[in-house]
Length: 101
Image (cartoon, rainbow, N blue to C red; front, side, top):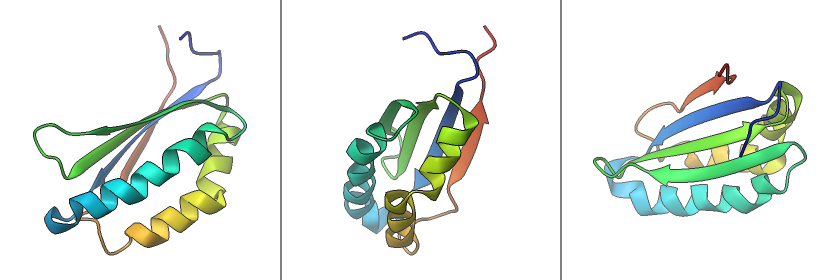
């Protein structure tokens, strides 16, 4: 899919505690469908690292920075963050990108 001009890609990495991988996977999986229905969401995909299954990565594309920020402020995002609070091995890593080529 061709990215729209001005669209933003976010890549998020979340590392679960080693004994909480299945719990974290279940919680994170619950984010996918509600997020895909959000205005401005172009794609939202979840991946699990094959070398270290405790690491989950989301690659998501948004029409604009405003739509991405609305996602971060959404109820389901904040509810999920609360559930994950004591289940992560490290703070999540969020990086944003704009396609240049």
